Image (cartoon, rainbow, N blue to C red):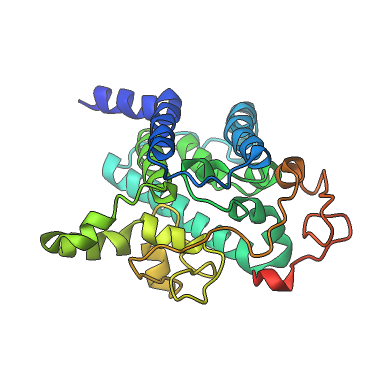
Length: 291
C-alpha cells in the first residue's frame, strides 16, 4: 500500500501537479474566470515564474542536500527515520507551513522584504498562475524548502513527499479563480464543514481577501490572512479575517505594470516605472500602496 501512495505523490510532485494546474487553468479560462487584465507583460512574468524556479531549484537543492548538509550535520543523516509516518507528516507540515506563515508575514511588515514579495501581489487578477508568481531572488533565498530538505536528510522523506503533494493542491486551490468553497457556505447541511474548513486550511475566500487591492470594503485583508496551507496560524496569531465574500479587485493600488524583468529579477534589474518601489531611485514602500 505504501508503495502505491509513494508513487501517487511522486507523480503529484513531479509531472502531476503541472498537468493538474494546466487543466484548472484551462477551466478558468474557458468559463471566463481568468481575469482579462492579464496582458503580455503579466503573461511573460507568470510563465517565467512557473518555469525558471523549477529548472534552477533542482540542482541547488541537490547540492544543498548532497554536499552542504553532510558537512553542516555530520553523522545525522537518517537520524529521524524511526519516526512513524503520521508524526513525521505532522512535523513536516508544521515546520514547513508555520515557517512560511512567519516568513510571509514578515515580507508584508518589513519594507525591504516587501519589495521581494511585491511581485506575488502585483497581479490584478487571481488564478492558479498567481500561485507561482514570485520574484526569483525571493524564491531562491527565502524559501522554507531548505528546512524541508533538511528534514528529509534527517529521515522524513516519505512524510515530506505526502505533505508536499497535499500542500501544492491546497495552495493552488486557494489561489484559483474557481470559487469551489461557495457551496459549503450556501448549502445548509455543509455549514459545519465550512466552519471547520475555513479555519483550518486556506480557501479561495480567505486567500483572495489577502490579494485584494483594498481593505476599505471590509472584505479585502492584505494585512492578514497570511496562512499558506493552514489558515489556523492566522486564527492562533490573530491575523485572520473570515467573511465568506470575494474582493471586487485584486493587486496593488496604483499598480503601473512594472516590466516583467524588474518584477522577476529585482534588485538585479530595476524598473523604469517612475516612483515604483522597484525602480533605481524609488521609495522602499509607496505610502499610497498602504503595504
